[in-house]
Image (cartoon, rainbow over all chains, first blue to last red; front, side, top):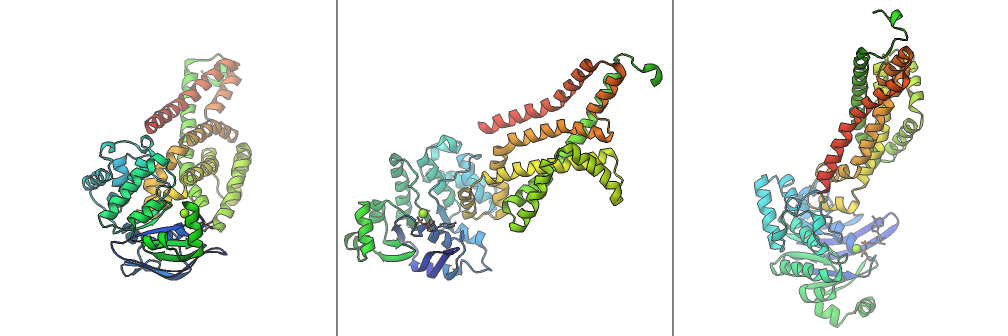
Length: 240
Length: 220
Ligand SMILES: Nc1ncnc2c1ncn2[C@@H]1O[C@H](COP(=O)(O)OP(=O)(O)O)[C@@H](O)[C@H]1O
Ligand SMILES: [Mg+2]
């Protein structure tokens, strides 16, 4: 379980997250929506300690993420993350991209790491592209490669930061399909997304962020059908 | 045959040997300076990328100094400065010292550009997989950055090799100095400079050829 308690985040004087309280249960799929600059990405970065926090706490399976004694490198293995930019390692083949972290971080043998990588690449539908370099892959394929790379660490949680926003429209579907598949397999997911269809159909709950505040959270039927906050209403009217 | 007799004698086969030996010294002084300078430069480049304000604001101006003061002046200054601090370095050691620092200053820029070429998003991606800072450096930043700036590094290495000719002002008999000696004796500047040029070419050609090969392999 991910527990976020009274989380405040500043960039210098800029107050980016203003007291976030949020629990995400095992197996849950949470979509986070909201306009650009509302702090959605920053929230994800605070969960896997890519950003420091100024107040409050993030607790993952009972471990305080931002405590000095916490081994962040160990913790992050359990929190897979997929970014807007796919960030494939350009000097490695698809297989090597995925095998790298299992080998050097988890200390698997090269053979084992490659086997894990192959399994994950097949899982996301890239079984035909094992020995191809990222430059020969489409954006959608590279994003699925990024998903496979995160999955290869066998995380219990996956964080998606607008995984489809940088893709050409015709490539969005294949990535959303992969995310939907993970959700159906029971993966715990927090998905920052602008894909309202995905948020409505796949998530258990939807959270709406506005200027660093979580204005509203609830089941998709309620958020999309009967939003309480004026800001949510406005936002939804604009994205439709 | 004594030197007095050979004054103004023509170019002989022996002279080729003399030049080849000098070319060997050019190669030695360049190779050592490039290796040492590159190692120091990589560390400084990392310091300029990752260091705090104090590191960057001390390192920056010092390196600027080495980059902007002509190498010739640095060589003469240091060569005359060492004895003052009780460090009598011969021309060879002084040359290597100055040339290495000069190389380090140039490589720092290159190394820093290489690290900078791997953006924050990429580095966050590798850290999000659980890689430590140094694993990210070793397995992601280094190979990507190296490919990005390798041609620039080869450029530095080749120019240092040519600039090593300046060490001749300290009396170290490398290729250029050897040529000057022979020109004085034979009065055949064209022939000798052509031979010297051929030696310089022979020294740089393998490096540029090898780097071309590497780049082609990386591009595939
Ligand atoms: N590294 C940073 N330094 C300074 N300000 C930042 C940084 N990252 C994000 N911000 C600011 O924090 C706010 C929230 O950003 P972000 O979390 O990226 O929003 P979102 O993902 O919802 O678009 C924005 O105003 C943004 O400009
Ligand atoms: Mg964002």
